Amino acid sequence: MDKLLETLLETRRLTEEQWRELLARRDSLDRAELFDLARAERQRWFGNRVYIRGLIEWTNVCKNNCYYCGLRRDNHRVRRYRLTKEQILACCEAGYRWGFRTFVLQGGEDPGLSPEAVAETVAAITARYPDCAVTLSLGEWEETVYRLWYEAGARRYLLRHETADEGHYRRLHPPELSLRHRMDCLYTLKNLGYQVGAGFMVGSPGQTDETLAKDFCLLQELQPEMVGIGPFLPQHDTPFGREKPGTLEDTLVFLALIRLTLPPVLLPATTALATLDPRGRSLGMEAGANVVMPNLSPPSVRESYALYDGKAATGAEAAEHLADLRAQLAGLEIAIDRGDAPTKQP
Ligand code: 5AD
Ligand code: SF4
Image 1 (cartoon, rainbow, N blue to C red):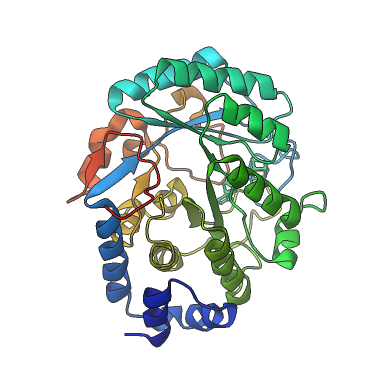
Image 2 (cartoon, helix red, strand yellow):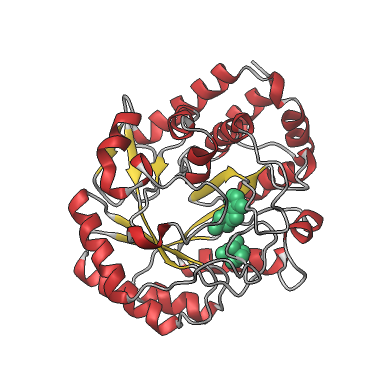
């Protein structure tokens, strides 16, 4: 076995230097062996169980201008929408019937979404479905706002760090956004008691073995309960519209390495991965992922939530087609419970 992989298995951490070295020779790693190790780790913590999360795309309005994202404020070709509390509750009702016990409310940084309205919606969901978890993914807000939402019942927050390298962060974002503030938000969320999810795009413009090594070090430091990674995919109305997409191979290798670094992590095979390759979701599970997040948004808005071109939106991506998803998860079973991050090995 690769020496550094052995060290990773023994200590669950590598130095930045070691990460760089391992990542630099990732194409010559024995992938079958790597994925076996990742699946064994997943099996130890979760058995055969896969968690499903119902993804509700609340608003595609965003005040930010990230260079990679189709929802950026300068993209005037998007039909903007914002769901009402009633629409969201209707999504939850359908989702609950289908077996979802986690609802992920995701959206751009929408100034028209008041913190109070979010709190009210979260409180309404947790009152109606006390056996369900509410995850928020609404970007960067003040600590007081994050606290308000926690008190309303939200217990998980997804905020990808995007890249742990300052220079690379500036390449991906306009100057008003900073890695520093993003990390402050992640630590604030953690301190408030949220289970947090960090993560990054695979193959984003400017990503190198050096920036990736920092991403892995950041994950070791932060110890997030969830990690979301998926390939960067160009969106034609953004400044990165002509950049190359991330690769399937890299995404799978990174999923496996994350599973080995953070064994009990909740790790989705993302929609971006399924968009890049029709086998993406199954291959992601084979590389150690254990979460899938089918789309529970009203079908009429799904197309408008276009972070990148070609977003997979049918079949197993759609919450109403859980049977399609089951068929792709050969040997794994979909768990019908909240699926909190485990704290000790079962
Ligand atoms: N390709 C892949 N992922 C993207 N995201 C945004 N734009 C793209 C894109 N073009 C991801 C970012 C963000 C999340 C909402 O979606 O990582 O955190
Ligand atoms: Fe807005 Fe998020 Fe897209 Fe950036 S990545 S433009 S914050 S929706």
